[in-house]
Amino acid sequence: MGEGDQAIHQRTLAGLAKGLAAGEFSSRELTEALLERIAKHQATLNAFITVTADQALDQADRADQARASGNGGPLNGLPIVHKDLFCTRGVLTTCGSRILDNFVSPYDAAVVERLAAAGAIMLGKTNMDEFAMGSSNETSFFGPVANPWDTKLSPGGSSGGSAAAVAARIVPAATGTDTGGSIRQPAALTGTTGIKPTYGRVSRFGMVAFASSLDQAGVITRSAEDAAMLLGVMAGHDVRDSTSVDHPVPDYVAGLGKSVKGLRIGIVRQHFDEGLDSQCAASVKDALKSLEDAGAELVDVDLPNIGLSVPTYYVVAPAECSSNLSRFDGVRFGHRAEKPEDLLDLYSRSRGEGFGAEVKRRVMTGTYVLSAGYYDAYYLKAQKVRQLISQDFRNAFENVDVIAGPTAPTTAFAIGEKTDDPITMYLNDIYTIGANLAGLPGISVPCGLADGLPVGLQMVGPHFAEEALLACAYQYQQLTDWHQRAPGGFL
Amino acid sequence: MDTTLHKAAGIILPPDLLHLSHRQESPENPVSLTKEQVQHIATLARLQLEDRESDDVVEKLSRIVDFVDQLQAAPTDDVLPMAHPLNMSQRLRADEVSETDQRDFVQQNAPSTEGGYYLVPKVIE
Image (cartoon, rainbow over all chains, first blue to last red; front, top):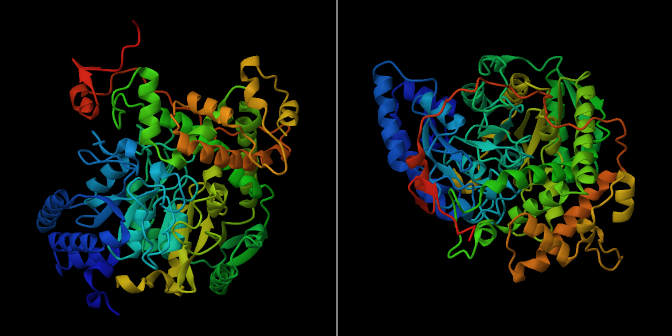
């Protein structure tokens, strides 16, 4: 099927760029069509917290003018939505929390700024787990997001709104953030492509902080090519983020053509243990076979400490979050309790009313592991185990170019299925957390359907290997069409 | 569990924190934190817990703490703690003003201000 036969909302960013360049439609027409689609599916999916229609139409008109005069950035007139964790000047930025349900950001996040400067048009802000703490989008103050493949199911999280919107062909691309798997896991559960870059690759300036040594911004798209287009714009040094790395940004799109011939792909045996659903395992193995048939070499690698990544994460991330979330105190911005008796009451009640149950649990876990007498036994211990896990990856990457396996242990699960037990929910991220602890880039691409639900293949590379990951994902998407499968009700 | 944990880590608890260390241990009751301990943590974290959420918090927080306890078994002698994924050090910059004054604009988000100040309940009588 040629691009000309495709409805506008079914096109990828690359396809839309061609359509705009060829004058098939204007940015305004495109924006209007997608705004209509957002409205049409909001009641079913709840993927959005805010829709910025007027602003988007203004931007679209400017993009059309720029194109007419031969100007315009690399993403001129292309639509995008942002996870509601990115600060957007003059627009509500809630982070999925009641405590920020009235917060209008006074500035733009670096990611928002860079994409806008390249000409991208923001259509709205997507729903998410509160403060990105969750793997199912159920902790959002604004209610759960439904998975377009089956609306009784969760799209995963925390970037659940972004993933659902892209999967449902509402928008071609969305930003996300990934602290323990929050881009890759929802991408896997919704049949989309999601990349978490190397820690420090993309500026965290203007991202509401959850766990600062783990948080990283990325994108959810419908193809590796689209992810490459966006990442090239988003990546790069920013003095406003002290952990942003001054490292050259390659032309990711130009690098997509690199063949997988001779690529050494590491397979971690533990990732195929009994914790993995058998149908998911079969899909992932098929994907690895396709890559092998295309000339890649599959090599067994050992990550001896990877089994400790989830408990390590659940010390480090809550510790950092308990510190980061201390800024929400009812004084300078956000929710404030009514008629506080004294300052302590103001703090405790504003936070008690403003935070949801999962955020409270994590703040308290973090407070506990950092408290006097427990710091060495938990926090310092976890930092040491984190070092061991990182060392395992360093050793593995001496022998292989990427490590590949499943993104998530199962396909999408029912809304409400895992909310009673935090540990069961946490184990969703068993395959993704390692990359965050070690600061490595990771990508998830659709690699099959199990009982009609998408399965994700995850590839993790050494620091700053985004180019290789995107090329491998792109090559895989030339061999298969899983990334083009759309959920039935959203064609 | 808790006692051995602290012996292993060579930690001596100050008397005022001793009450945090008496985690219950019984096979029938997997809950390892008490309601009082959880309340103390909530106070440290400046979080008011409603009575109706208290039992749930005690139960789930206990499960989380028990879950992360498995780290204790990992041999980490001579391992340096990892504080940064890329082992970078913090960059320094010249101590120069780089922001413009946007106080009034920024304070539009504040629940209560007066004359450029943030208002809170009286702290000193």
